[in-house]
Length: 309
Ligand SMILES: C[S@@+](CC[C@H](N)C(=O)[O-])C[C@H]1O[C@@H](n2cnc3c(N)ncnc32)[C@H](O)[C@@H]1O
Image (cartoon, rainbow, N blue to C red; front, side, top):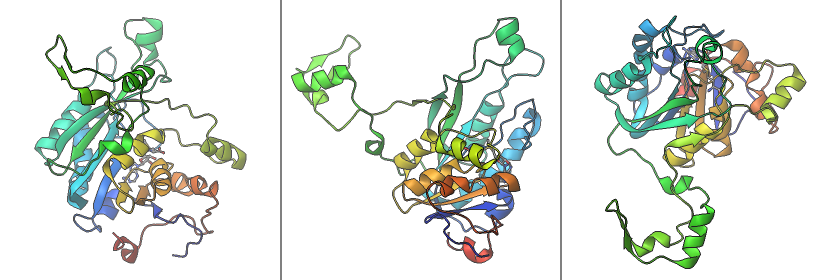
């Protein structure tokens, strides 16, 4: 396979990730970060397993993730909840999946995160808009799972800007005190440590109407992937859980948001996407940065390329 001007740190392949992973060596990947097709009861154009068979389907992939991850590696899974068909009650499939990932596959739940998407559409319309007996489902789950109990992680790489109140406190200083809850607040609390430690709620919309990806897709008449996650999600976890040069893997790459962010952060990366159209069109994420795939487009990785891992 001949590629030119491809991204510097990784590649996106058109293939079934389950097949490709069997060729990958044990303990070679630092971070698997992905958003698979969810078990929604309305079918997506790219196909998705139903609620009943979902856990069984996903565990086939998860066992491979566990095998290819380094002992200090992490697996970050973005998964949405869903409703029981015909009734205004929630499916438990994503909780069942989490339990199986830990009990059956051997992952540890390092921490659960929530992605709050204020721009999420109200659905199902029947329960939310028409009968008005449920509210908008505006969070998705992000499970941070780890191969061992002490995965590589450093929250000083994802610090956020201090609030105005905190900035004032840093300026003024603080005398040690004891809160009514019993928590002891030490003087060092008001030291400037470069930013505040983020919580496990990630807030970002998925309505990047003005992004380069959308602009160039429209300009070039390419199809916009229907289920992208915002770049902020992989960016947060790549920064938090890896260092430059580490290997990031997205087995359900879609439009390759993960690869583009990993490239920007100088992590090595590999993405696999089953749909030829999505895999080919994801090229424009690099096109806008001056990298263009050659006429061969995307293909399955060769054995020689996989030994890069
Ligand atoms: C929710 S989308 C991922 C979107 C991606 N996070 C983005 O930002 O563009 C899930 C993707 O997984 C792909 N997929 C499903 N089964 C796959 C498999 N066995 N191997 C590789 N890709 C697969 C689908 O075609 C779909 O594009």
